[in-house]
Image 1 (cartoon, rainbow, N blue to C red):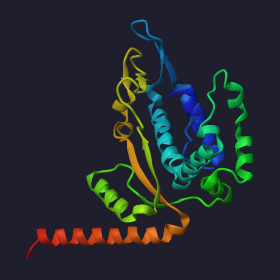
Image 2 (cartoon, rainbow, N blue to C red; image 1 turned 90 degrees about the vertical axis):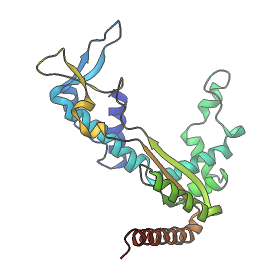
Image 3 (tube, rainbow, N blue to C red; image 1 turned 120 degrees about the vertical axis):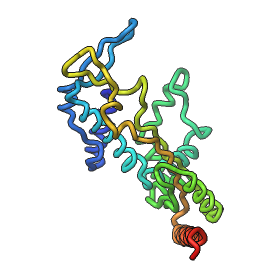
Image 4 (tube, rainbow, N blue to C red; image 1 turned 180 degrees about the vertical axis):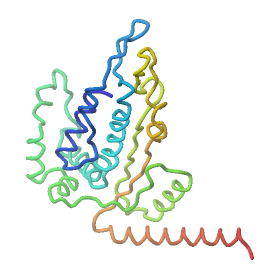
Length: 250
């Protein structure tokens, strides 16, 4: 729980026109407390017991913002194109170092310069797709949390799509870490009693890390890729039906 996280969640929610990253900032301000450090350590930020739900909502807001906005299939596609275009545009395919003697050159690479390079036709295939909004299309994605069966299906789809796949992206994030990073909650009755948020909230305690995998194809191959994925799903249903029949003989 920190000022940076609270700032970008509310700001990005506002500018992207969504509600996912919103939480009760006033309630956070009214319940936040400084917890004295021990053994010479600096104080920590926590919340009073009456504010643990708003701390929980902050964690949930971050989860929703990542899964619904930052990890959105189209936004991820444009990340692919931006990386590819910059690799073509930048000298030697990378930014100058932000330190002397390359600092002045680094500062010249602002948004306007990059946009100007893209509008002039630079950036290779990725630059053209950015300028023309003709982005790669999602052909297949695993669930947010990949199990053994999901991994096996991913490998089957990957094999069947073969050369149609032009990018593989992983949307991975650990939403809440217990232990030292756990948000401390101070008892309203006994201020000396400090417990972690995960002892109050089953939601944050059970938030498992994402390890979703997304496979992308070119737009011109999208329909073909969809047919392959649908056929694989049909084959999977048939396999499951056969297994159920074999396990339940008459």
